[in-house]
Length: 169
Length: 102
Image 1 (spheres, rainbow over the protein chains, first blue to last red):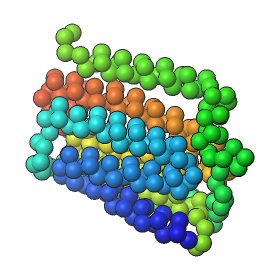
Image 2 (tube, each protein chain N blue to C red):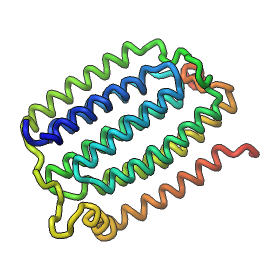
Image 3 (cartoon, helix red, strand yellow):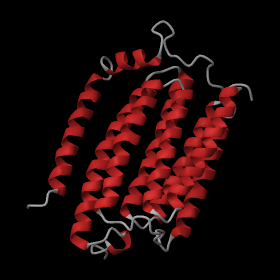
């Protein structure tokens, strides 16, 4: 019951902040609303008993990605603090696409998973305790090769970003 | 209305996804389009973890972690590209990056 109340409170805040991200006329304000959405997503992860992913969400998204975004805003000299016309001419197409997608997905989801409840105890392996232990076991055994590939991908992406953004070429 | 339902998380993810799609289509500033893409990736992560919790499987959490890592790589490369577009054209307005239009 309490979980339900908090779910709807956080979800309402998230949807409001997400709408503000795509409608505000100020780039920096959009970035700060995006922080609110990320924090809400982390809270939903905790409701789903995925505390490790929630902490990672805070570290990577709110910590690293938002700092990168703010650097991007500053380096491209967006008019900080001033409002600009940030929506292009075919925004009507965007609203149409989004509403159509929402209708189709809502129909499909309600049709298929109408009233499936989530289990009360959302820990995968009650013996091991929290889900963090199960996740780490799984990453370093079953998903070891994808994990290594992701680390190589991250390295390649960072080297590529430096090469692309270098000035002396 | 006592327990958490699977569907409320899935519908929240769907709504966030649609808001992100609108942002990608309607935004002018390249950095704002990147922010909308982050919204979409977060919506997908909510879905992955909701299904993981519903099936009692830890694979949803593992894939969400992979998605977060790939999102970090994507933002790094994307912002480098935005920087070089700005350096070459003195603007990050997507409507002005149309030199390949037929």
